[in-house]
Length: 310
Ligand SMILES: [Zn+2]
Image (cartoon, rainbow, N blue to C red; front, side):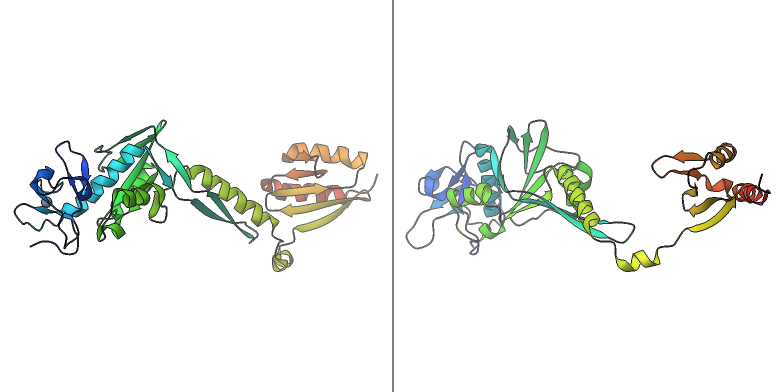
């Protein structure tokens, strides 16, 4: 009994080339065999049913049609040395410490990708991609899905471990309809709707670009008012040393010492800063003292403040 839902429309000829039912002689004279089971095929080109190949034994070969479609798609890519690839999109979200959030999306348009070489039957680790193309010094994998789509573990291996750009071409829609070289070429080479990225080509540059955009967007957002009000005010203590004002400001990263410019106080401070490891911050015009020196610092400044004026 013949499989009624899927007619085998392609077969392999004596020269191992895929042939359409439209391009061969009628009957056994076609000289074709089944790419799945290897049995000789009869080209049925009658008036009643759609033209198709039938197994000589009358076998209902389940995989014949699928295998033929798969091989034909590979042959098309080998001959064209390129395919149209769909748009590439990557989005990133950046969350700043102050609560501001920004999103960035980097895209590359749909384009024709030319390969320097196209091969099949090459094994990488534990996988064998349907098509292994070369882009200069890097590889590009193509998976052709007819009824068997890429499995979860193979997907993860390709995406996270092998890190080679990979695309899957979905031909499931063609499996149950009659197809010609033209319609198959259209689907494999030109159409992008049935192509899906497993691992995006040049994703590193897309990721960096999306992050940069996300950061810019986050920074352009106004700081939420609530955040401003609830921000912890640094502890500020004011001392007077010989009637000269000096502020000690506790910050999470150190203790800042600020005073209006005064030669007498500056000389005193310089000595103290040497003892506590303080360093001058010219951009803020203050000293920054490590947090470890906090107790000693307060003691020393209190002592200076309590000294009777000279
Ligand atoms: Zn067969």
